[in-house]
Length: 458
Length: 180
Image (cartoon, rainbow over all chains, first blue to last red; front, side, top):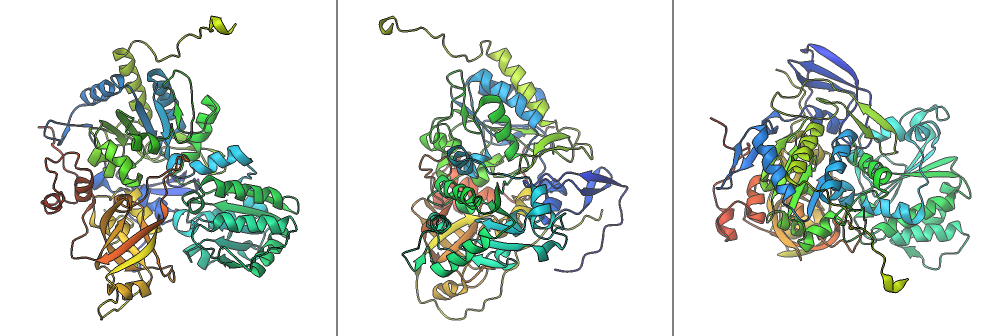
C-alpha cells in the first residue's frame, strides 16, 4: 500500500461518533468534516471508514418510480410514497425485510405497519445468524458482554469467523490486543484459538489454528464434549483433527480462567446449521463445569441484533414474524424470507436498509423479479436493479441519530454528525408516512377473527 | 477536496505465474462463499456498480495448485457451475492457501447465482460447502447491473441469455430519468 498523506484540510472534528458498520458498534470514532461531508475518519477500521466516507456517486438522492418502459424515473415524495402505499395496501402477502441497518425507532413504526396490514417482518438474521437464534431457543444463551471479555478473558476462541476481515476492530477493541483490568499486558495475557477450515487472516495471528475439515464442525464439537465428559475417543482422527490435538485443546480450554467462544457464519451456513450452534452452546455449558466460559455470536450489521431483541420483546419471536392471521406467528422454514420467496408466496416485498439483490440466493431473487419491490436505502445497489419504487433514506450514525444494539446486546445511541442531503428523508419518517398512507387506503386493520368455540366440543 | 482513500482497483493477491496449459479442463471443487475485507469495504461504501465491486466480489479465490491444473493466471476468467446455476468470475490466487480442492467466492450477485437456496427448514440458505465445477472460459465477467439484467431479466424484453449478455453495458453509474 502506498503511503497516504494524512487529512489536514477539514473544518471541524465531530468526536465520539458510533460506527454504523458491524456488530462491534465502535463508539470512539472521530469524523473530520468539511463542507458538510465526512472527509476522514479517525480510529475506524477499513470497513467503517469506507462506509462512513460513502460513495456519493451511488447515493440515492431522489425518490424514484419505474415507468412503463421499466426505467427508473425521478418523482416527488408524494407520488413515490402513494405508489408504495398502494402496493402495500393492495397486497395479500407482503413481506417487509431488512431493518438491520436502521434505528430501533424506525423498527417501531415498521412493526406498527406490519401488524396493521398482516405482513411478515424479517431481518438479515434469516440469512446469517438465524440458526444461532434457533440454537439459543434450543440450548440456552451463556453470553457475556464485550467489556467482560476485555477485562477478564484469557482464552478467546474464534470459530467459523474471520474477525480480522469482517470485524477488524473486534480483536483490537474488545478481545485480544486490548488491555483489561485483569489482563494488563493485553495480547501477551491471552491465548487465541481459531477454528476454521481455511487458514484465514484471523488464523494467521492466532496462537493455535484448528483446521477441521469442511462440514466437520459438528463432529469436532461432539468430540470435545465427549472428552470434557471424561470419555476416550475411539477414532484416531476426528473431522480431520488428530485425537491428541483434541485432548490438548480440551486441557487448555479447561484451564482457562475466563474463556470466550466467538462464532460466525462458518457455523451457521454449513449443512448442520443450527445443530452446529446447539453443540457449541452445549460445549460452553460443559466447559462451565471446569472454568468460566461464555459465547458471543459475531453479528454482522450494527443493528441486526437490535431487530431480534426488539421483535422478541414486542412479539415474543426474534425474526421471521408473520402477522397474516392477525397475531404473531413464527414457524421456521415457513415464515422466513428465503422460504417464502422460493415458494413464490409474497406479492409485495418491502426492503429497508438491506440488500437482497446482493445476498439472497438466485432462486429467491427470481421471485423478486416477478413482484413489486419497494426499496428504502441510502445507496444504489443490486436491489435497486430489482426495485419498482425507490425511497432514499438517511445514514444512521452519520446523518441521523438512532438507537442500536451491539452484538452482545448492549444498547448504544448513535448520534448525528452531519446533515443529510436535502431531498432525502429519515427512515423513521418514511416508514411512518407509509403507515399513515396505507391506513388511509385500507381502513380496517388485519385482525384475527373472533374465537367461536365449537358447540359440539363442549 | 481531499478524501481519505478507501478505493481500490483490485484486491491484493499473491503472485502466480503459470505458463503451461492446464492438465484438466473441468475441475471438481467445493465452493464456499462469505465476506472478506475488500468486499465488505466496497459493498458498504456503496460502490456496487463499479469495476471495483466486480473485482472484489466476482472473484474466485483458488489454491495455486488448482490454478495450475486449469492453466489459469490471476485475473483470467473462469466459469463456475453448480446445480443451482453458473457464473463467470475472475480467478485469483487465494491469500489463505493452501486449500486444494476448495474455492472461495465473496458474497454478492456473482456468488448468489451459484449458491444453494436450500434452507432445510432452518431459514438459512446453504452458502457454504457446495459442490461445483470450475473451468477456463473466454466469456467476460459482467458488471453488477449487467449481471442483474442477465440473471433476473426483470426489466428487459428479451429471453435469450446470449443476447442479453452481449447487450451494451449499463455502465458504472446509476441510470435514471431526472425530472425536467
